[in-house]
Every structure is written in C-alpha cells, then in structure tokens.
Amino acid sequence: MADNVRAVMFNNDQQFLIVTEVDDPGRWKLPGGKLEADQEPKDGIIRELQEELNLTPRQSKLPFVELVTDDGLSKRYIFKIIAPKEQINPTGSEIAQIMWCTVGTVPDCQNKNHILAAVKSLSVI
Image: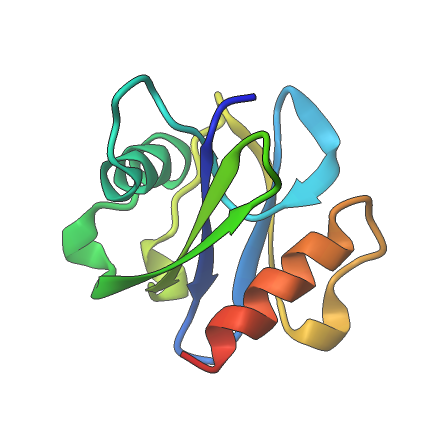
C-alpha cells in the first residue's frame, strides 16, 4: 500500500474540514491523498491541498505539525493546518462535498473513528 498524507484543517472557529471525493462520494475523509514516488510528506500535502482545495501554503498558517501513524503496511502522515473558511475553494474535478465540523458534528461514516482520532491527537498540539 502507498503512504498517504491527510490534513486536519482547522478554521478560525476551531471547526475542521472533511470532504468527499468525486470518485468516492459516500465516504467522508480528511483532505489529502497518496504520496507520489519519492515525494516528501510535506510536499505531498501541499500538492494535495492545491489540487483538491486550491489552497497554497501562503494562504494557510505554517508551520505544519505532523503526526505519523504506521499500520505496518503503509504510513499516514497527518498534518495540522489552519486556514480561513473563505480560502477554501474545492475543485469540482476531485472534491464532491465539503463540511466544516466539530468533534460532536462529524456524521456517522466509515472513517469517523479515523477522523476523530486524528483531530483529537492534533488538537492538543
């Protein structure tokens, strides 16, 4: 399995962003995707956020805070990012829906536990 990158993207109201993708419209997840061959995780999340949400590093507050999980098959690099809601402009070619949530408003979905674990882990950092 390929390593991937995901972003817990908080806005100024302490809500975080979840998305569904055009090719998987029924599954809510954190923004991001697979790393390309030999790509550094920070470069991968920057690329994914530009492709999916038209968000550039200048529009988000840096530095990125990175959390790595490893299930023995692949690594997931999860980054904490702060970006104002008005900076998010999803691309129709990749993102089907976006939703700003709090821990209590994440919809029941297949990835809910993964989303909440990442958010809770990065909320304290």
